[in-house]
Structures are given as C-alpha cells and as structure tokens.
Amino acid sequence: MEFLQITSPEDYRVEQIYSSYCTTFCEDERRDWEKLVPLFTNPKVKIISVLHESKNIGYLILWELSNCTFVEHFEVFEEFRSQKLGSHITKYLFENYPRIILEIEPEHLNENSARRYAFYQRNGFQLIDEIYVQPSYGKGKKPLDLWLLSNYNPENVKDIKDEIYDIVYH
Image 1 (cartoon, one colour):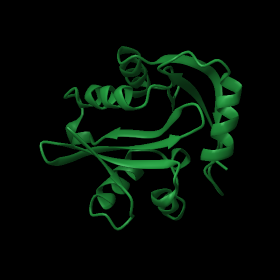
Image 2: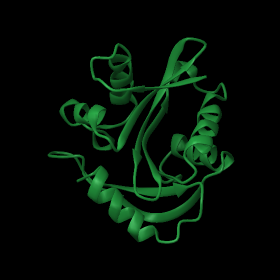
Image 3: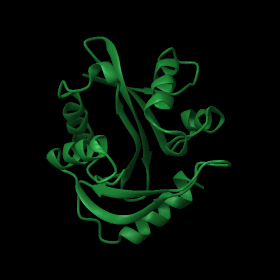
Image 4: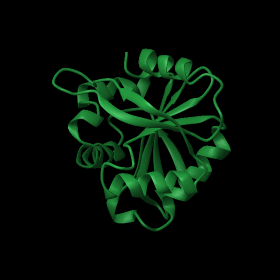
C-alpha cells in the first residue's frame, strides 16, 4: 500500500477523490470545491491518496495540529470496501501519527454509522466526546452533532475541540 501526498488540485487523482467525496459525504459534511482547493497548499494539511496494487483506492485529509493529528476525512472508495483495506490505512495512521482525533456520526443514526463506529473501535479508537458539534462548512450548510474518537487518552478534550474549531473550521 502506498500513501502519496497530493499538493495540487491539478493532480489526476483529485477528480476521482472529489467525485467520491461528494457522493459519500452529504452536503453538510464536506467543503465546497472553492474551500477544498486551498487545502492543497496549506502547511497544516495533508491530502493523501491511498494506492493499493497501483489503484487509487481512497484518500485521507489530515490536519497536523499542535498536539495531535485530526483526520477530517478518511474514505476507501466504495468498490474497494469490505476488503480490510481500511484497517491497513488505520495501521499506517497509527505508525505515522501517534495521536489521532477524528469525528464520526453517532452510531445510533443508521446501520452505516453503527458499522463505521464498530470499525474504528476494532482498529484502536475510543469515544472521547459524545456532545461534539462540527461547525458549519459555510453558507447554507448546517452544523452537525458528531462524536469525537481518538487512539489515545487526551488530557484536555476542550482544548482539542477549540483548536479544531479555530484551525480546521475557521
């Protein structure tokens, strides 16, 4: 498995990534194209294409914050799901980013949410905040009630949330 950082929206993989991003994540859970483009050159952000057997199988959008790495988006493309590839990606994350925070929909929302939560639990994440609100991504988009998960025991969840709000969702 290869993990290649994409530094330009002109990269040939971006079209597939953005298409899947728009299909998988609802309007309120994602950035519009105009807000995504600046991330490619933001020094705190890594947009990573995940390749397996020379195929682009998914991507990660990571934010390197002061004391942790925030996974804004993590997706294995639909045709590659249920093949244990997500677990391999999680292993890569653990090996390269020891303190990871991510947000997910609460498990009680639907079957996919429950499956996603179970996946993260199996892969070493724990629930650290059930009352987290993802701020709106912009005009016409709603804030979302989500859960925060981590692969470590953060000392101060409020400080982490404040930094996510200030830097990721500014």
